[in-house]
Image (cartoon, rainbow, N blue to C red; front, top):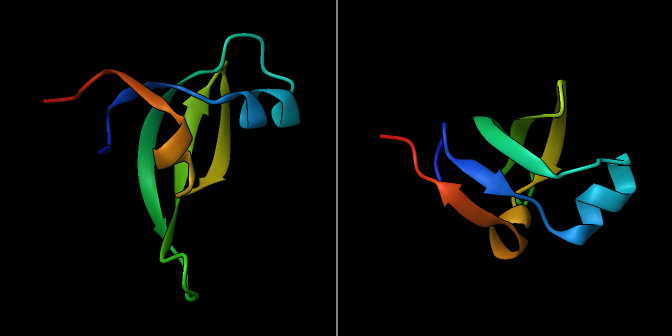
Length: 66
């Protein structure tokens, strides 16, 4: 996964944030100072939300950026 990719989020973030569709664009990797290394800033349904890098194991890439 990389910045600009269009993804379909897993059920966890969809439920947690009350999203209708769960389609998101990866905007930026945000560094962390712990073992998780980074979070993702995503744009979905007109909102910016921050998700842990664990989304890489549960989200599906719909369209890759170039």
